[in-house]
Length: 108
Image (cartoon, rainbow, N blue to C red):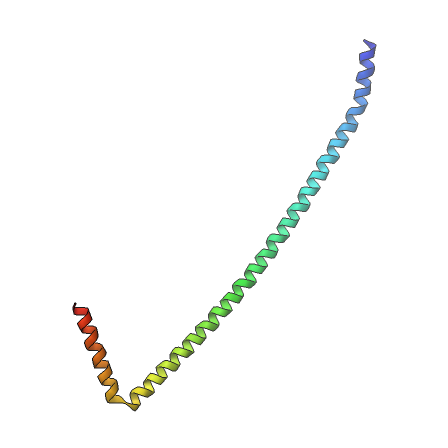
């Protein structure tokens, strides 16, 4: 019986040491998890900045293309206007011909 008491006393001294070990393990796991979460958060923030920069670049390119298309369309319209002014009878004939062909296609 006394032998059991001695073992219990020895185990009682080891229990706080085991608890302290478990506490340290849990604390290191929490610290590791926080470090990983911080690293993931930093990567997400970095990706957000990169995506925003890409979106701004794409928007700028789209605006540039829009301006180029508008300028090109204006140049074509100006050229057509000059051609019509230079050759008014031919322009009327071409317009009549296009209208006649369109009418024939629509009637079918």
